[in-house]
Length: 155
Image 1 (cartoon, helix red, strand yellow):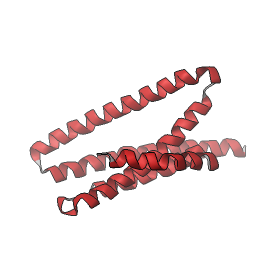
Image 2: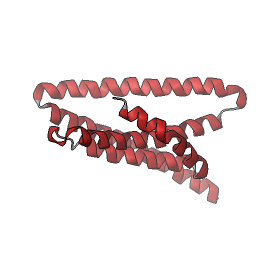
Image 3: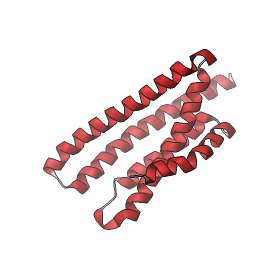
């Protein structure tokens, strides 16, 4: 349970430096794409792969999350006027918590429906395929923003 937060603790500094060195949104896109790869890998997990099979997959998702979340926080806070940064920090935390709660509830409901009809392994595979689709949509949205931003800079 503590492996994911440990990965984040170790990599957050590097994610912040990458966001400063490269463009924050480009690092966010790379992070989301790593999360997509992690979700695809997690959808192939089977009980015979053991704890190591689980940890590298969760680690991949967590690396992607770290390289998304750190630059995302930076990008949002840079948009706020200095006198509004406290408010923006609170809204950022609220949106993150709302996303966690909503995602847990929706994926938990899907899991509960699937587990009645099928095995745990299949239910977990489906959950992570759904997560792959949702994360892929996030990657597409970030890409479109980057593309539009590139057009503005070239104009």
